[in-house]
Amino acid sequence: MAERSDPLLVEHLEPLDGLRLVRQAPPPGAGSFSATYVGPAGWAYDPPGAGGTARLVSQLVTSAAGPYDRVELARRLDRLGAVLNRRAAPESAEVTVWGPAESWVPLLEILSWVVRRPRFEPDDVRRGLRQLAEHQLREATQPGHRAERELLHRIFPAEHPYRETGSGSRASLRALTRRRLVRFHEEHFTADGGLLVVTVPARAEVVRREARRLFRSFPGSRAPGAPQLPRARAPGGRATIDLPGRSQVEVRLGGPSIARSDPAFPAAFLANELLGGRPLLNRLFQRVRERGGLAYHASSDLEAMRWGGYWVALAGTGADRWRKVVPMLDGELRRLRAERVGPAELRTVRESAIGEIPLSLESTAEAHELAVDAGYHQLAADHWRRWPQTLREVRPEAVRDAARRAFAEDGSVAVVVGPLKAGTSGPGSSATA
Image (cartoon, rainbow, N blue to C red; front, side, top):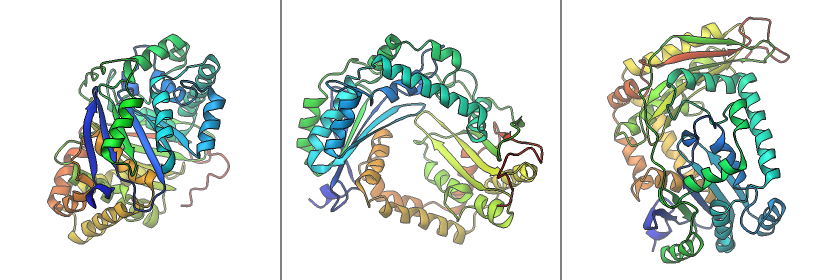
């Protein structure tokens, strides 16, 4: 019984018509419930010439569904003390409901309506299109958003599923009719290829019974095939985009990387924590921001997904300092690839990462994220229980070797976006860190 109530353990239950089902116990004493549907509905599946489809569908499914229009759905959630969230990514789309544990069955029913029977009402579609157009404007004019978009365009070739940010173009938005949105939903919010993760105190057999009752029919029956993966190109070099009048310059260095299933992922995870992932302790923060005083922020990310991934080292700085920041980021990357990390530094960063796991069990919502990750990547039931030992078994030389692959110099590029000439920044643009 103790193991059944351990939120670090997940139960992979028997699939329901292809829908994979995962059950997780909430943290002890928690009074809330979470459930997430994950479907093969990311923007890598956007039809040709219809960029933005997946993002817009993901947004609209939580607006009105089944017996509820937009206002009725909001009021129903309010009465239950619950919230709906959604997220779109290249490979998938997620919809999550969170609320009181005693209301888990009616909340799971709401999730089932949202996932299976969204309304796509005309007013909601028009509102969503306006919001997506506003997002496109931010991507074009805000240094951080623009740097992310330009980096992906330079890492990945045309037709690669990770190349776009999912917001489409002005022309593609004009192609997004309600009929196309409904068709995308029917083809991509499916049982086959989908995942339902439920964090609730109820026993597995009860969870499966309610899931079967509520998710018994989907518009589509078969999951779409995964997109082709053309090889990432290797242009190298630097791209600079001048945006006068902005408050800071955003710097990105990045390149293609490994998938989450790669055996080197634990060592690559620690390599990223050392470089820029672990708050305050990472090298980029200490070197570029603390000692150098050259940046407003400095960090790194390793986006290891199912089909592959990419890495990015990033910093925000002033117009008069970016030329110093770029070689500093590059220097820390070279050091990570070339040098064996010291045992003391590795131990400090590793134990900090391990110490974060208990903090993830302070609320149902945070613990639920662990279960969604385990379910999506089909990790072992005890993956999170074994994760600390997995990290402690990673040797310093393995971190260096993993960095050479996961943060490879081949295929990497630098992107600099913002007011590139000193004196062209807007108000509040002082480069003092």
